[in-house]
Image 1: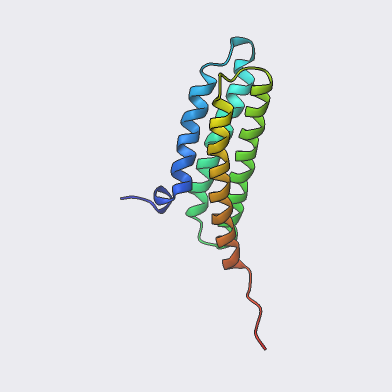
Image 2 (image 1 turned 180 degrees about the vertical axis):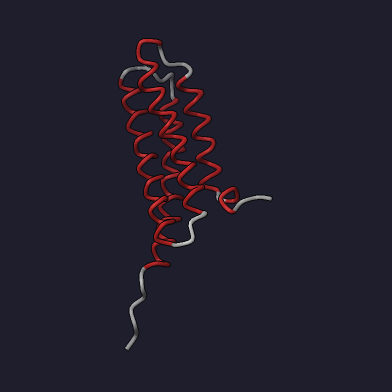
Length: 127
């Protein structure tokens, strides 16, 4: 049996982000590895986990909230990657490449959130 979240492209892309983050953090130098590695990995996992959990909620309000949390985690990942790049922990064009992935997830997550929010916002009555 396949659950609904497994069909969501944004969830599929968030899984790829987790894999990318793990691969990148494996290259971090030992002196800065623990703190940023741990934070980045947890935040990236949080993106996909909150998308999955949100998709299973019965109320649209709960769904929207979990998508908001996923977005917050995505921005946390971006921030930590920017800091990692500032510290020269990221090789070559890896920041540019992963930023493209993050931007894509951001757009899809925003669309998912907006469509869910429309379902909880009462429409105006026509006169």
